[in-house]
Length: 151
Image (tube, rainbow, N blue to C red; front, side, top):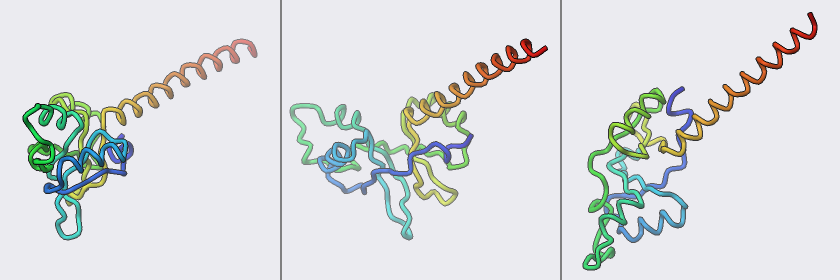
């Protein structure tokens, strides 16, 4: 299983100069918990960072700070961690655990943004796989019962 099979291809993006208030409004309007900050390079969106709803709350939620004075680059995580479309899903799970992150932008071989994979996406994929395993057990039991009654 690779990341490209499970990532969300609808990524909300903005550039580093987008006002933080606009980033927060994008999150609300699009019903997402993160926005990927990108730069357009040769008509490709290259991820520079990511801002989560938590980042906004932790960085700007002080009474003396005015959200209107900040841009995306002031709050985004500057260490961008990405996954490649072809990366193994289990490796990405380990990476997320090691780095303590819940979302990773997904890129192709040219580092162009292709999607985003989140903890929720991974959980959904794993639940699907476990569901298939449960069905296997059930079918095996039915087959065994059928074989015993026909012999």
